[in-house]
Image (cartoon, rainbow, N blue to C red; front, side, top):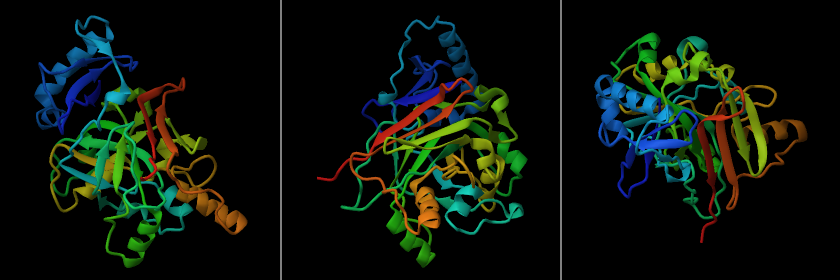
Length: 320
C-alpha cells in the first residue's frame, strides 16, 4: 500500500491512503490519524489500511479525492529517531573518502534538522552559504532489538520513501576536519510525498535492495539516473542492524541511505560528486553549488518511467 501525510495545520498532519497510480487519495481517519500510530500498532492497523487501499484502487472508495503532492508533509513528520547510513561506497569513493570494509557495515550517523515535505522550499540557514543535495532512499521501521541480525532487521522494514539530505558543503568540510561528528552541516531533509510497503516494489525489492532507477536532477539538468541496487553497498538490513548494534530502535525510526551513487557513469546523487569528478578531470570544479532559485527533482522510477513514490521537487529560496 501507499501512504502519505497531508498538511492540516498540526505538527503531525493527517494520514491518507494513496492509490497505486498516485491519482486519488482517501483520509484514513476511521483507522488512524497519524502514521506513527500505524507504526506503533502495525499488525492491527496495517491490514485495515490495506483493505482501504484495495477499495481505493478499485474505484469504490466513497470519499476519495484527487491526490495532490503539494499538500504533503514528510510521510512521518516527526520520526522517533533518524539516522544516515552512508550506504553507498560509490559516493564515498567519488569524494575520496575511506570506504569501510564490507564486513564492518556502513557508517551510521545521527541526523539533526528539519523534516520537509516534497515541495517545501528550503531557506538557507546561513546567509551566502551554498547548498548541496544528497539523493537517496529512507526506510521506516517497526521495533528493533539491540544487537539484531541484518536478516532480523530487514523484517522490521515497514515503509520506504525518497529522501534528500540538504548539506552545507563548507560546514561539512569543517566538521569532518574536526572529526566531532556532523551537527550543523545538515540543516534539513526533504522526503518524498508517498511512503510505500516493500511489496509494492514487486520483484524490484530483492534482499533489501531496490532494483529500480533513481533519477536525480539539479539546476535544470540531469545529475544522475542509475539503478539504486548496485549503488547500495550494504542492503537495508545492514543499515538497520548497524544502527541497532548497541541500542534498541523504537517503531517510527527512520534510516536514510545517504547519497546513493555509482563509482562510474551516470551515477551521481549530489553536486559534491560532480565537482570532485570535474576537479580530477580539469584541475578545478566547474559546477556551482545550489543557490537561491535552484531546484532539485528526485524520483524513483518504475520500468515504464512512472514515479512510484511521487517526486521530491523543491526550490532553494534566496535569503532576504
